[in-house]
Image (tube, rainbow, N blue to C red; front, side):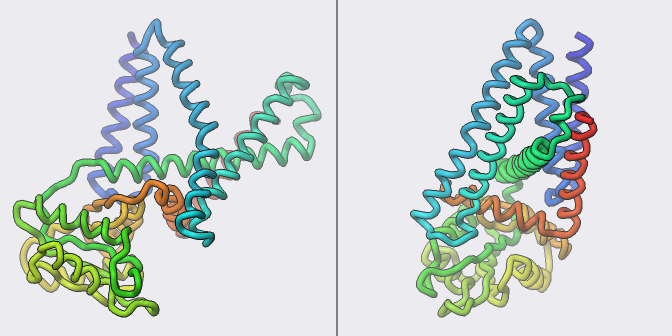
Length: 344
């Protein structure tokens, strides 16, 4: 019973810390790990609280995780195939295929490494085998793939959490992020989904907010993205006086910066939401923090086949930032060092 109480206290404490951090700033990267720790603590509590059925609970969880690990690479590779058929062969669209292949290679190498040890060396750390170049190289590859996969999983869970967490419904302004136009004048399906989500927010709001379609004119576009979005909003019955155009921006950061200038030009309350594709919300919130814009992120629907590659791009973009690149590399080096500390 003591173990159950301790695990319950750990679970509640971890969720409390996450809740505080999340309420302070949803864009902080630490929230990804705090959420993962909270979920892990909850899982630990369930295992310990199962009492006499603990071994069955562990067995079910182990089998579930093992099946998921086996399915994931094949799902990603199939998703990459679908992306090629529907969207073309551009590199950003092939990320799920590439990641699937990398994970599958890592799983095969890990299985071979474990099988070789079980059959020939019986996990004897003193063996010369553990000092061979083959073992060292394969171990580094396996640790790298496992570490990267876990890091991505933690990021994915938090991104999904942002999409489903309850939010306020009383906004004064709603920023709608633009993306490319079809034929240079019409909104694409991806952009239409963002606009439809903004319209949904507009209609359920007790005091309808001002909508800010945000996006400039690209070199292959005949009108600005903001103007194309305004035309769509008008067609859907949104009053013109409730639409504030932002047509200068060329990037996500500028979307928010120039939209903030529009918001700041008005008096009164300024409770703001941003609407973008669900995979893109987290990075947009990070830009909001940089410019001091207090904002709630709302994700719009994205075709399921498109989501994995898009989320991988977001993950890469986040870790391309200097601070997070350094943290990622330090974590990877610590993982490598831990494995060799155990072996040697």
